[in-house]
Length: 368
Image (tube, rainbow, N blue to C red):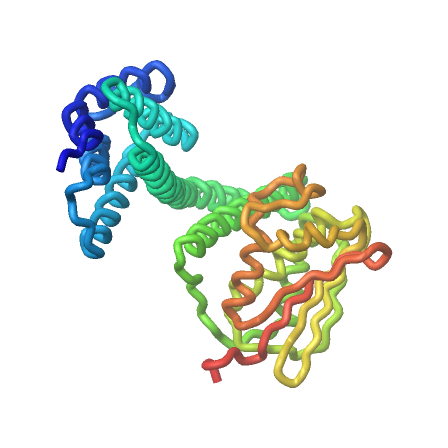
């Protein structure tokens, strides 16, 4: 049995690649910066697979169909991985390359005779699947590259930040009490600590995105003292706006360092988005098995539709778009709270302000 379309594609594969590269160089801007788009590319493999796909003489057993799909997926991923490695390639340009390829295949194969409906459908379905596979891998590879860059950058920033901090601390120790520069140096240290915290947030967000958990060291923590320590540190930067309401002796089994970050993130969030010059109240309560911390600020309420994205990383509500920061504070607060088998929620309404409520078990399951 003769396979006209399959045979024509096999005979014209090299010409198709040449025509495709000519058009790609003229129409895809990123391609102009590369010596060859094909020699180290997946296009020849793809055309060979399409030759088999158009054939009517190949027996398509379930095993053959499965093998062909695996090979097709590998080829599409290879193309997407290659293109993601070029800094000037975008997803749009990657997809456009496949649209050009499909047009060139139709153009060449129909020079001798029109393709029938079956053949056209196979070519269309094949290129669409190749686009999906390549685009998926392109996105994944790009995310991996960005994650590696972010982790490397934040790690390398730690060195000079530590040098600046140690130098500032040395200057502060040498200043005499009452010197007007003492306050400046102390504020510099506070700013350095804040920058270090932002870098740690980026590193932790990267770990969580890659499926890694946070490294938590559980110990017995007196939460009322921890909350008071956070408030004293923040008061230096934001003024005497914080009010702590708590019974003495409230303790739990937790990662002190990470729960401190939760309290600090929620308190700073209240400063940023609450009404200026109004109190921010941190209320610590305990029940028989659980402890709750409520951070309250006055001001405009958070819209119900905005509340659904508050705890997502790099997401901001419309009212928060002009604020500085990474948009990671609430995402990390939620991740840390859940790692302690706790919950975090928000209540916000006109006239009553906004409450962020963290509930933690006194002793997480499995820690007793």
